[in-house]
Image (tube, rainbow, N blue to C red; front, side, top):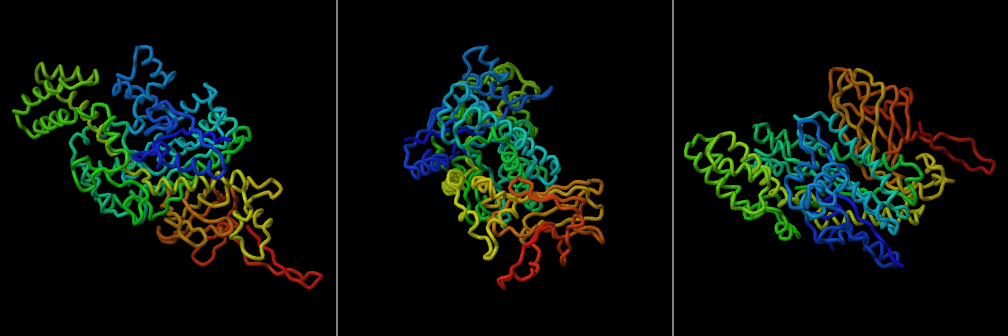
Amino acid sequence: MALTVAICGDSAMWGQGLLREHTYAFLSSTEIARQLGEQLVILPGRGVEPLRGEARSGAKTLPFRPQPGDVGDAERFIENFPDFFQSAQEINDFRIGDDESPGAKLFGENPAPFPTVIEVVKRFATTGAGAAADLVLLDGGINDVDFEGVLDPTGPGLGRVKRSIKDAFNLRLGELLEEAREAFPNAVIVYVGYYSVFSPETDREEIKSFGKYQSGKSAFLIALNDLIQMDPGPGKIIWNAIGGQDLDELSKGAVRRSGIAAATAQFWIQNTIASVTQKVRGRGIVYAHPGLKDENAAWAPAPMVYERYRQPGEGGSEVSDEMLATRLANIPRQGSLPAYQVVIDAYAQLQAGAQRAMNALVDSATALLREPDLTPKMKDAAQELSAGFTLARADTLVRLVSLDLARIEHATFASFLHPNPRGARQFADSIVRVYRQQRSLSIREVTESVSAGSGIGKELRKHGVKTAGGLRQLGPIAKITSLAVQFEGLQDNHGGAQLLLNGRVVAGIGVSDKAAKKLFVAADVDVPIGEFNEVSVRAIIGPPGAQAPKADMTRVFINGRLHASVPANEVRDVGTKSVIWGSLPRAPRPPRRDGGGGGRRRTP
C-alpha cells in the first residue's frame, strides 16, 4: 500500500530556506506514511525539485489583475523573466491567465506569484493526477493580502487590513477549497495556517535595527513603492524609519498589529473551512494550526523563524540558511549586481549635486549594456542614456535598475521570517496530529481535560456538538485555537478594553468610532475544549464613564464557528468584567430517590 500526497502552496509549504528533507511538507507526510505503515509517494511538481510538489515561494492564490494605470502580477513577471517565454502566443496566454506554466521555470526558492495556487490545483484536476491523492497539504493566501501597511500604526486602518484578510481567507480561500475538492476527490485535505511574525516577546530593538538597515539602501528606497514582491511584514516600517517617525512607537505598534492580523486570518481560515458544503468537505478538510507561541516569534527567546536579512558579506545579521547557495545560483541576473550598484551610486552623486555624475551615469549605462540577460526595457533605457544624458533618461534607467536590484536582494534574504528547521518540525507535528484526529479520533483525546463529575455528553453539547453525529465532528474543536467576538448594535459609551478567555487577556479592543455600531475582535489562543469556560471583556481606557463594549447582540465564535449569540440582557457584570459567555455556579437539585445529589451546569 502507498500513501499518495499532493503538495500545493506558497513559500511556507515549499520550505523557504530549508533542504527538502527538513520542510514540514516532507516531515509530516513521511511521518504519516510511517504511522500508517505505507510507502510514501509524492505527486511530482514541474520545477527543478519535483518532490517539493507544486509549491513555490511567493505564490498567490489568484493573481492581481491591474486597474487602469497599474502593472499587474502577470505583466511584472513577463518584464522580469522574458526568457521563460518562447513565443508571443505564450506571453499572451500567460497575460490573460490561460497558461501559467512559464512561472514554473523560475526556481521555487525565488519569490514570484506564478504559478498561482489555484492554477496548480486546477492542473491536478485537468491531468487527472489528483484522483490518486490520499492526502493533500495545502496553503495559500498570505501573498494575496495587502500587507504593505499591516504593521504600520500610521498606515491603513485596521478595518481596511481586516477587509483585505477576509477577502484572501474567506472569498479566495473558499474558491480554492472548491477547486481542491474537484481536483482531489479521494483525499483528506489539510490546510496549513500562518502565524504572527512578531509577538510581545520580540526584541523591539531588532525591529528598529532592521528598519534602519533597509532605510540606508538607496536602491531599495527607490524601488519600495513599486515593488510587488516585497515581504509582507516590514515594508511600512522601512518607510517610517526613513521618514523619521518614532521608531519606539513604531516597533510597539508593529507587534500589536502583527498579532491582530494573524488572529484575524486564523478566524477567517477556520470560518471558511467550517462553512464549506458537505460535497466540498468530502473525505475531510481539516485545519492545521502552526502552534507557534509568543516565544517562537522573530527575535524572541526561542525563535522558530529565520531572523537574518543582511546581504552576504555584510556581517551582523547576514542571511544564512540551508538553501542560500542554491538560491543565489538560481536568481536571474544575480551576477549583474555590481553593474547595478555602479548606476545607483552615480545617481546618488547626481542627487547630491555633483555635476560630474552626469558623465558617470552615461558611462555606467554603457557598461550595463555589456551585462547578459538584461530585460528589454532596461536595455532600451541603458541605450538611450548611453547616447546622451538627460535627467528623464537617468530617472527611467535608475528606476528599472532599482526594481531589479531590490528583487534580487529580496530573493537573497527570502528565508527571513519563514520557519527555520525547528519551526518546520513544529508545523509538521501539527499536521500529523490533525490528520490522525481526522482518521481515528479518540474521544479521550478530546475530553481529557473535562472536569470530573461533568458528563461527557453534556460537556460536548455545551460546545455545540451533537453527540449522535459521530466523532469526526469533534476534530475542529478538540483544541480551541481561534476565539472571536462580534458586537452588533454597540452602545455609544465605550472605550478601550481587553478580551479575556478564562480570565486571561487574549486581545486588546481599541476605542471605536462613536458612529460604528459593529466591532469585531479575534484572538489566537491555545486551550483544550474542556478548559474553555468563560469569555469576558474588561474596560481599560476611554472617556470618563466609559465602559467595556456592550451591544444589543454579542456573537462568540470558536475556531471560526458560531458558538453562541448572547443578547444584552444575558451579559453579566461581575466585578470589573462583563461576562459574555460562561459557566454559572451549580444550582442545587432535589435529591434523587436513591438519596444521591447532583448539580447541573448552566450556560447563558
